[in-house]
Length: 184
Image 1 (cartoon, rainbow, N blue to C red):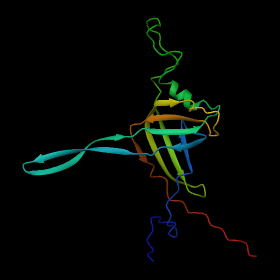
Image 2: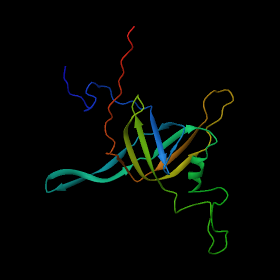
Image 3: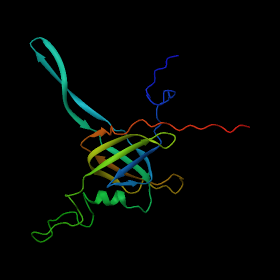
């Protein structure tokens, strides 16, 4: 059996981290209740170039996929307040307002936020973190389809466009806890 592992500190560990323990932070605070965060993914266009008779390919522009956040409906207005910074029902346009005034419920100055996504191991230790840059809500679902015959949890969704993400390399692999079973 090989002694190589992808975990330099926890050389006994062979199982990858699970995807069910995570936290999301924006405005310096953890936002509670997330049940699902879509994948962090990016794609890069392939540019085909031919020099003489030699075909070659090179990378083109990269795009970062939008991230969808899901959580149970609660009284916490965080999703709605952020979505309203882009568009608000009470003030959809500034065309009807006097010259020089502005729509105070729509904030072009601070509708973008940096978000931090943290992943934890089974023991609750932070093992990875990603900084997601200049996010803004492009879709907001306040309530799901409602069904009087169902028993599902009501989930709200926020879709975030972003300008990229990078891994926080300051997060080191933790020393995993261990314990000894009591003797019988």
